[in-house]
Length: 466
Ligand code: AMP
Ligand code: ZN
Image (cartoon, rainbow, N blue to C red; front, top):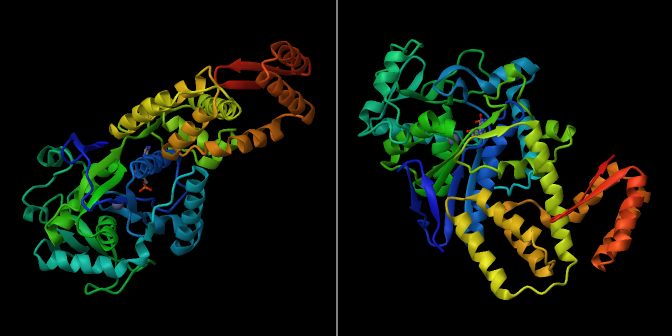
């Protein structure tokens, strides 16, 4: 079936057909590992995961690369300020390599908690310095870069067009800019591809221009080419990457290889908190573990992300994520009810649902609408193993780990419910399977007398302390 994806490059939804048969080559900009990734960052990786799962669901084989930026990302994306890694190292009184190792491990643990499939290749910038240097040399040899006292700069005036990805009007921006333009640059929007290291900079390498380190954008250009070739299918990132990072990656690849490296450029909109920006100074930057401390499972956060299409902003509040936690519990209960049901469902109904689901996810990854289909199945009055299997099939795309629903429910129950109550719940469940409603009601009242209120919804049962 046809797949349509929105391409930032052409600003339209286009038919997606991979360049190389059944294989999809995709590059995702990964984290800068100077601190814990926050829930906003994870919206980007949840998007990346759902996209690759959707492509796999369509029968494609993924060749997916994600980078780990452990050097070269300066405080501002436009070459201003200190290297984020070095700054964090000073603050924590550690060496930047220790910082990178610690936060890379934390990141990988978090993506596991979110049931995000690991890309086939995870590439660290510091392990690809030779490839980056080579890329820089090629850009210089083709006449697209020049040296200043600070480093090697890309000359954007040599390109036929800049920018190509964003609608930035450079002249207007220059007129309104508050920062002083480096007088050594030929054009105000020229950017560093290789940076000469100040004396006290720890991460630095030998190069024809002395001890120095790579610019952030060159990392992705060089690692993308190494693993995926000069031209690949999809490049992903957050919307903040459009005006600078991805624009400059394209410029570099055009300089060195004469090509825009990816066919499709896909960007996920920002997560906002309480209707505004997430920022450390506002104290509203949360990690996956901090949500967990407040009783929100990582997978509930994932389900929360599914409430909005990836190209619309999503507003985080504790209230809304708490309702996603409840929804996740109901989803698990609803799935389990189906696993125990024996109603007959015709093949036609199952096939219709499959087609509808596929059409929906293939329409630029419309996950909120796909969730609507899922809920319709969960709430169906008929309870059937065929529906349970269908939910598991759809979960290949959603990655909510539904197959382990029972384990999650038991884990939650262990924490919250005494054994006596658990036994009564189980007895009531059996009564309901046997359609013995009188016994079911009697057990519900007994549970309530012991301090727990049961509510039956179409998706299954919920329980709360009275
Ligand atoms: P960084 O570690 O800063 O390079 O960012 C990692 C990824 O998170 C990038 O793809 C960013 O575009 C993305 N990102 C950062 N903040 C947010 C946010 N509030 N909402 C969604 N994505 C974000
Ligand atoms: Zn990147």
